[in-house]
Image (cartoon, rainbow, N blue to C red; front, side):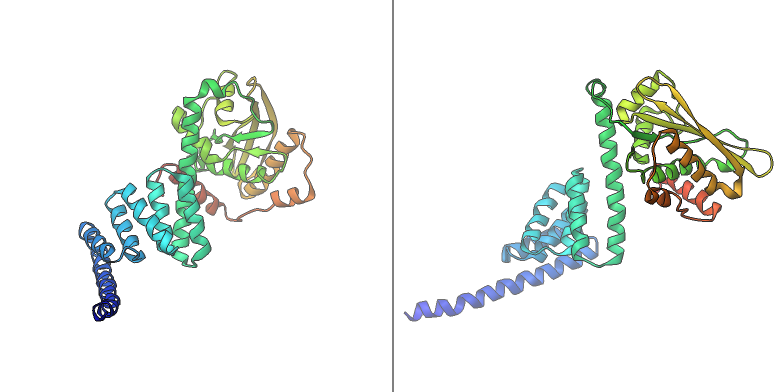
Length: 332
């Protein structure tokens, strides 16, 4: 009886020692993490877990150390253990990074989105926004590669009506300082056309990925032969191909054509021209000409939304256009 009472008294004490030991080992593991000694951190966190297998700090630290060592599968298991014990922001963030590294982009996206619901850390939230953008690009890259690999099957499927892809505009003038507008103008048209409910617009990044895969560059030569293939691969019934040219003085002209991907036929949109200082107004005029060409009647709300001009600075727009090109080249 005395022996049993002694054991009952001793067990909680031993348990406390183990928990205290585990906590101390976790602290040492954290120090090793901050010193970037990840191998030592793994050893210490594993010892902490042996002392207390419900130590979520140790499981999280172990997962982070394994991630840093590119042991992504092991990191996944450790971080999921920590996640099941306590759903803290750091664990969720690293689970997103692990699944991104494993190219399981849907899972990564889900954990990044979950992080935003439990944390108000501005710096991490901005970082996650960047990761989500990067994942979106990766998913589009996968979709494009799948389309090319399965081109025979996809070519037999009908292309959705009123789906439009905007190709990059070509600079036909001598002023090469306007070259960045090739992507910037296309992006502005995509943004405006996306506000029309009757249209479905292909993302610019998806188009870029297709151009990269097919090695077509930024101004591909689209004709009656190539248009149907492009349309099938990118799932667009119409392609917008346009150009701009600097005229005498401070004048500029914007041109656009619709290409029917079913047969490769062209349908010209009324061009617009004017002073370069009125560029944004000219761009809006071109958009409305395109929509009229499609036979679409806009609602008052759609028209108002399209008329919004994001900046009055042409230099800011050129900088933005250069940013798009750098992003496409992976120069984030």
